[in-house]
Amino acid sequence: MTASETDDRLARTRLTELLGAVEPWDEQERADLTAVTEWVTGGAPLYRVRKPDVPATHLVSYFVVQDEERGELLLVSHRKAGLWLPSGGHVEPLEHPWDTVVRECREELRIEAVPSAISGERPFFVTSTRTRGPGPHTDVSLWFVLRAEAGDITSFDEEEFEAIRWLPLPQVLSHPLESLDPHMHRFTRKLLAAVDGVRRPWAGPVAVG
Image (tube, rainbow, N blue to C red; front, side, top):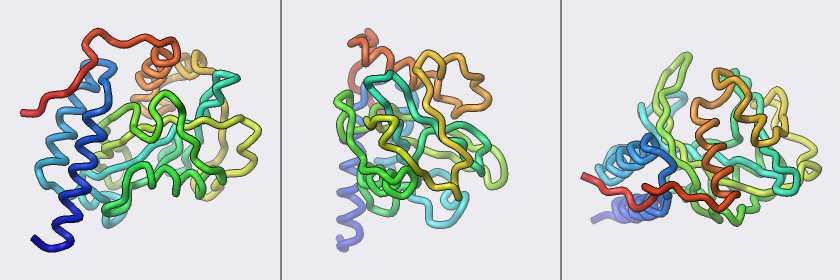
């Protein structure tokens, strides 16, 4: 086995462990976790090598910044997507998804990534989404939760984002879903439940195969 093959195997093992630690919020997340784990372990390409759609499915790290004292989430108005989204970016080849969060947080929001106690440096939520617009592809997204005070973020990447907005969690749920990431309401409900210490009765390890 070559060094590159060994590195790839280690990266897939690491990703499988991260996915296995996620407790699914609903049946859709359970199904996504199973499909994504099979994708990772099946040997398919994981990382984007050419914008926007090569390979057709690739890995993304989202990070949702929460002001815990105010109970608000930060969303960004993404220029290309035309939606209000969490910040994030594509995982580079063999990069740990948490390292993607650290890198992108500095680039996009000009702050250091501080993990929330809810999930630490592990993903909290997992989605698989077919994108809209030119070059449609599937983003496999690992959602991380960060903490920061609203006043900590005084600038952002204006090439990528038109604006940023802090929203109370209930207001995120009342925001029209067509203007958000299609899974934003589900993520917010899962986060609200985690904040309240509530766990879904079917949460548990996801079987593959």
